[in-house]
Length: 458
Ligand code: ARG
Image (cartoon, rainbow, N blue to C red; front, side):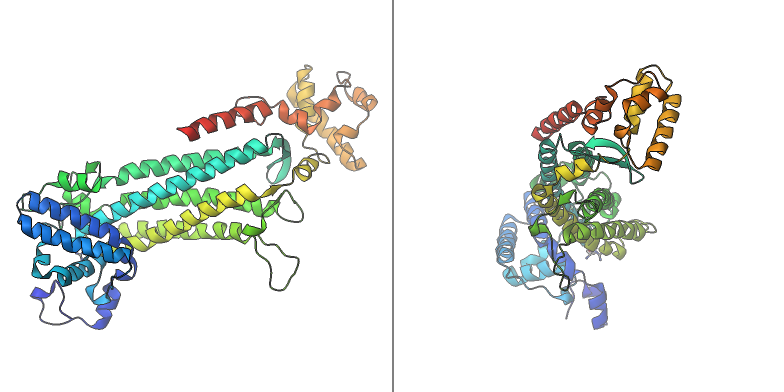
């Protein structure tokens, strides 16, 4: 088959060159963006008198036909036409004849593909931001239902101090809020038009780059044509932001999986987001959470892949850059579906408030309370720590807990201890009194929720 670029060639490509070189199997996903870019470009060409008004109209009509066919899944792409740009140009030729050849005036596939990618990512980022926002809303609602739900807080996976489950959920709210901000910044950095950079050096035609940028809804223009065609920072930034996002989702999933075990039973993931086993009838597996955790690997992989593709590339365009797309598509699919699933999973999961609270009753997560109690009565904290440590050891040897020690025994240990110590040792009091800014105290959690709700309204 004769190639659109075959003028200076005498030989034909082997089939495997077509197969190896083609990107149509994946860049067809940017067909919509490619047509939009062409529509803007042709409008500019005729506006600037580079082609006649009539030619402009013919090309526009042809592109509109292609748009229509694309919407109805009626376009057939071929590997011989290599990529989405050449495929659409060949199809345009079928629509309107030789005048189709004027579309590529003052343009190269290099600025064309960069434009498509900016448009694609702008749209995707908007969806991603929306999905993160939804998850944040779900988290705040779930936290509001669980302000008074008490659970053990952990460090080193050991019971540390009791906390509000709402507080725990809001920690994730904070992470996803940062993720959303990063994606919003990413959107700004993507909102810049490379169109008109042509192959690498600009063009001799009197083009109007502002016109195409406005037409496509870009806020800025690349200032340097070499940068415009070879910059993929906006994608690397996206893959990096997506990796951080997936890392957050994965940590959360890890906790949900753990909390769903028979040993914990803190939460029950709804049937809709669980699966069974083909052999063990009793099983209810947290597959969705596991898959999100697993897909984090892809997100990291795609980031490292593109960083590696770019690291040795001289300016400006090199065909290596064709390898910038699949990771972006793959990561987008992974993060959008993970976010959607996570929102549904959190929204519908059952929180076993009693089990969580019980987990704080037969443990030593109130040891800090006793040390603080002594410190409040004037005993230096280091000494208080030592006293409580000894008491914990004795309890372990006797098989009981700090709240089981009789007052008489307490008063032998330290005369400052009074009957009010037992209230201090309760998990509820322990949580309630951590009222320092950002702490787990109920009032603090309520304040966090109020602030989060305001943020969500903006
Ligand atoms: N399919 C190519 C890509 O995705 C389009 C740009 C090709 N440019 C070129 N000079 N061969 O990167």
